[in-house]
Amino acid sequence: MEEITFTRDTVLSDIHLHIPHKRHLMVRLNAVGQPVFQTQFKILWENNVLDAASSYQESEQEKNKDSKKTQELGSEDGSLFTKHKKTHMQVIEVLLDDDGDLEVERRPQSHSGKDESQTCSRNVVCPTILTIGSIEQTEEEEPVYSTRDVVKIEHTMATTLEDVGKQIWRGAFVLADYILWQRDIFRGCTVLELGAGTGFTSIIMATVAKTVYCTDVGEDLLEMCERNVVLNRCLTDATGGQVKVKELDWLNQFCKDTEASYSWTEDDIADLYDQTTVILAADVFYDEVLTNALFETLSRITHNLSNRCTIYLSVERRFNFTIRHMDITCDAYNHFRNCLNSFENDSNGKLKWTAMEIEPVFPQFFSYEREHLELWKIISAPLT
Ligand SMILES: C[S@@+](CC[C@H](N)C(=O)[O-])C[C@H]1O[C@@H](n2cnc3c(N)ncnc32)[C@H](O)[C@@H]1O
Image (tube, rainbow, N blue to C red; front, side):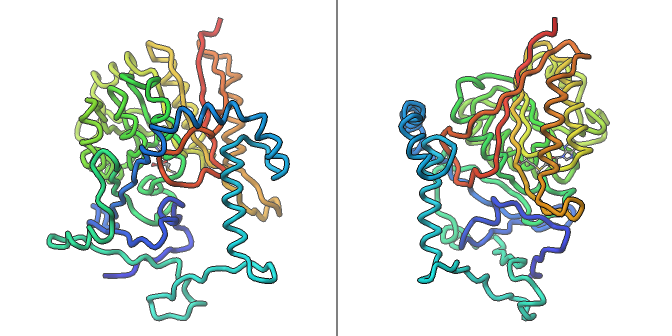
């Protein structure tokens, strides 16, 4: 088995990077020869269903009390954030040596036999290929969860930017958390997800919604997404939720090519326009041209909907050092905020949009880091 290495233009999602000490289970090669892995994401029901209501109320009630503690810790946020920050401070203490210097954990030795300075050992992923007869290995690697407790996702590990949808991004998790937390809002709805990637958020949405149009672009990505939908049928069948995987390119709109596997029929489009009340997009703001295209798509689709609709967008603030600014900037995020602002102030259509940020203090149903993630809710009213 050849080693999988990163090249300069590949990216790896934190979701896959921070699954510590866990070997990644490679299940197949996809149609374009990329190794496909399967990861099980445990749904933390026990932490949330029982405690969520009380913890959220407590967090609201204790905001005043906590703001005092928060000031002591120098943070500006509420109780959950304070607790969270405290935990991190404890972790940092553990990582300091006697003189207070940071103890940096070394990456494992490269398997390539090359000198560490020649290849970055983080580049190497050691996949375990699942074949018939390797069931014991699966059980050893992954705890066995009940089907209702786990989302199984096939994905690739490191990709070029054009294939980022084959990985799962933290924005998908924050949106999924919000959906599970606010189940009643979404129950029985028809939903459109844009840039759905592996389909993670659409699958979670289909555990409460009636129909989810799960859309993205590219045959091999959509095929992977469809496989994930099938893999997780046990989660969605219980409530009768249906995920329909379709091609929707923000630069080309609905794919109606009858030869294409994920094309739209006129009936699909009519149903989408007649029924949709919720639109989702997770972590789709990383390129200015695509961000512009996404907002144009939102505007075009929402103006054709029969009902009022609410849009939920998750976005990660990514900081980069740029030579142009000789500073750390957040260009893609800033562009998103400018587009959001223009979307709100656009008076050409028949709708008036209002955007509000949802504080990320709702419970986590998945294990990931929420730092630098934002969730936005955009509501519409007729423009008078
Ligand atoms: C960073 S990934 C996020 C995927 C998924 N929402 C998640 O959070 O895991 C961005 C997604 O936008 C999709 N995308 C990029 N350009 C697109 C376009 N022109 N039309 C539709 N989707 C596009 C990508 O294919 C990819 O799935």
